[in-house]
Length: 200
Image 1 (cartoon, helix red, strand yellow):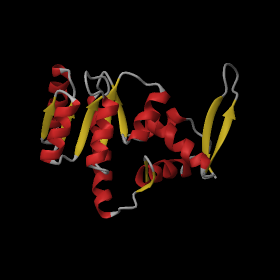
Image 2 (cartoon, one colour):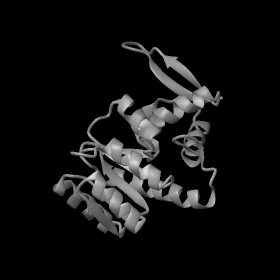
Image 3 (cartoon, helix red, strand yellow):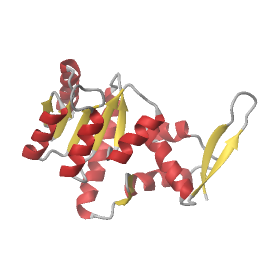
């Protein structure tokens, strides 16, 4: 079951339609407090959560959900693509992002991927190697980099994997700190240099 938490009735309707199309049962809440109560009562498989809500915003709701359930995937729906916002949510326990306006194919692929990780979490308690870092997500990014002959940009990775730009950025930063990948600056012919990434 998918728990939808959004104060916008039209968006909740759209999300329920997407879930119904994929034959995923869903339930909805119009605010974070109500959503947390449903989470405690129904034990859903995944949460779709709006960032901007009155009273409990998305961040407060993520923190409250994480106190109840350490492993449930939480996909944050937002129009704000700033990296500092993404980092704050990821540190609080969000697992992925989907940008508004909602694109059904993108959201469906994210839900499927996160559901897959959730199933693995039940059998592998060590799936989270560091706070907010999921083994399977890291593995999929490393596998993609392994198959590239040249260094690639975040956009090139994100276009091939059903993972949000902000999530790819965070994992690459983590992997660079661990010495698993190399960051290459490509100066090109004009403008600011682009960071590209390759496996060491």
